[in-house]
Image (cartoon, rainbow, N blue to C red; front, top):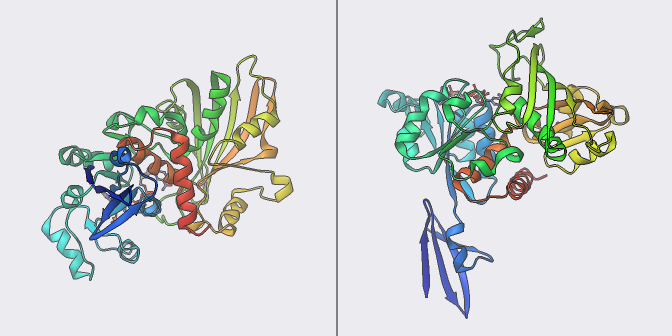
Length: 390
Ligand SMILES: NC(=O)c1ccc[n+]([C@@H]2O[C@H](COP(=O)([O-])OP(=O)(O)OC[C@H]3O[C@@H](n4cnc5c(N)ncnc54)[C@H](OP(=O)(O)O)[C@@H]3O)[C@@H](O)[C@H]2O)c1
């Protein structure tokens, strides 16, 4: 007997051999054995074909995180023109496409010595889902191409929630995003707020928060932004970060203010959370709650001498994280204090990388392949660790 299932993207076979049902996935010209999969599970296994539109700071990281997973693969990444990021894509073996469909723009890649497989439309033809990692506010113009191609789409935090209609963080609203046409992984700051506030909200049943984002001025690879010698308040109160948390967890009542400071390493949050009467927590049990939650690192600054964002980043490099990234939110144990119903704490956010694993979980949510966010998070993180030899 031979069973067959065609998912949106891959062909699966089941064959009886020696009284046993064996399942295979077709990969190129090879049949890959899938261990432990019964015939009824055929429709559940799929290798999701992922396109990355915008291979910059976030795009190149999401591409590698996808490449690390066994249930998804990169079918192509785009560059606007043959600039230095193309070499990385070539080295990684990711098919290179042009962000645009114009023939001259595609031809420019060959002139610079790169094989370009076509324009965005060609890439969308072979994808199940596209992760739009274009610069903030640029992505909105790409949405109609995704909708027309019938491809699911994930935008980043530089786009507006209203343009996309859904937003995402793994712990806040994975279920609400299941099988959606598209979503937006919220910004690095909002992802960081969500990581530590959602467990608190879930324990307490209600939560009011006031916080200040002390933001890095620019990414390390960014030479155009500033300030380089000033502190720049965001003259819009509240800043977008707090209200943005409410796009993934509307029950959290949160306001934020923000200042940009001349550093490129990380953001730092100063957070005051007002817990309801009868919360039953202590400083120690808040720390325990976070320690049991994925993607949060807690360290004692006094004991470790990791007292600034510089040492946090050095720590990330020391433990072998690729690009010196830190996907986890860093909380200083000795900066946490619960005084009655008021909780004070600081946390540091590696802006270039905390959203990376969330994009992987968001892909599974949109494709409906994993409904339990904790299972997805564990799978994502384990695969990234193994991929980077950690
Ligand atoms: N960097 C962060 O710290 C951070 C953190 C969280 C979220 N985000 C969000 O993630 C998104 C990407 O930010 P980023 O920092 O990765 O930006 P980035 O480093 O400037 O990269 C953006 C990439 O998009 C490409 N691009 C330009 N125009 C495009 C278009 N019309 N369509 C598709 N791609 C286009 C650029 O290609 P070329 O290089 O070929 O010109 C560039 O590689 C933004 O929404 C941002 O707000 C950024």
